[in-house]
Image 1 (cartoon, rainbow, N blue to C red):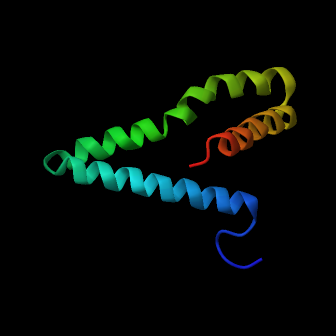
Image 2 (image 1 turned 90 degrees about the vertical axis):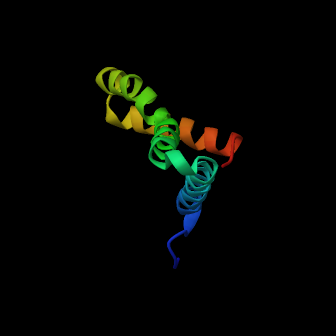
Length: 86
């Protein structure tokens, strides 16, 4: 398996990177006089999912352990990326 985007996880990561780059690039073109603010808001909005899932994941690890939390949240993330592809 050669290349950086080999396998299902790698292809998912490539799609995420492509969407991220397109979103930030578009925002910078839309607001050329406020590039820093626009990029900061776009990156903040893009990364908000990670911030919103920290507490539920932490609580699940405390209640059920790392393995169960990994399988559950990994499945949810895989399912959501399949349902709403980038």
